[in-house]
Image (cartoon, rainbow, N blue to C red; front, side, top):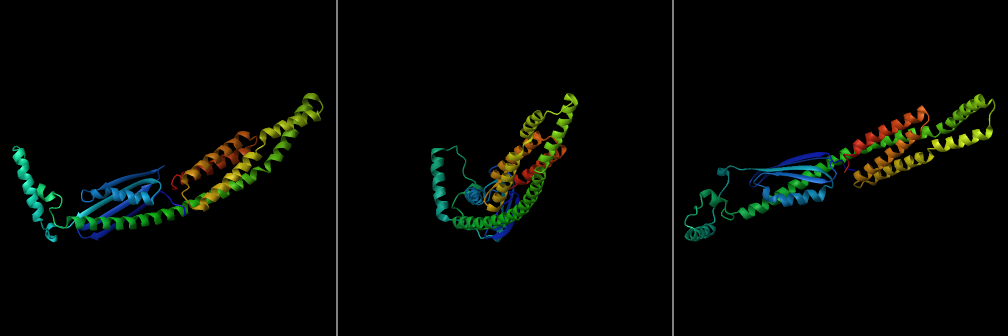
Length: 288
């Protein structure tokens, strides 16, 4: 399966402490780059979120937003742990005895103290599990979205490859015709200059000309690279970097083909090949 690096998914779910909102989006990037935007209620779970995303996605610039809309205070049964409060009071007295000028704890400070609210530890575990389950679902949705996009990219690249094969096949029959035209032109020039045709000179010039315009090696490499691109497309593994490298190789052969051209037809084929390669390269930038 081939995956695009472009995708989006979101989920809203009910949890014990409120409503959990999760949004995930990604675009193309050379490596995996995570941007987490977690609100204060869920920021403690950042390591868990990073681990889950990194295990599922290989490349892409990924933005993850998670927020928890907590229930109103009158909807939640709040209880305080007397033992923790007593320990906190004793610590406060001890601190003020050593540092009389220190400010006493406010009610807000006390309520934020770890363990003061009964059920905090249990709520933490429940919320962690809820975030894990929700993130796994969102990652699955995004993966399916990226897979659908990958199928479209694969079809587009196959279409461009088919066009390239047609163009490559057009070039091969042109070479004998180019040699024949050059031979006629050379013979005419020699006859005009020497009033006769030097057959040996013509053969030498034709040999040099044939070597200069010989693009059989370039056409063979173009064909081999096209077949390799097809193979990678069908392999289904992460292939973006390998395909990008092959686009460079294809472009190099197309440039050489244009440099050796002595006819308008071959030059036009070279330009058409480079256009198709650039179109494929743009699509490949989105492949994981």
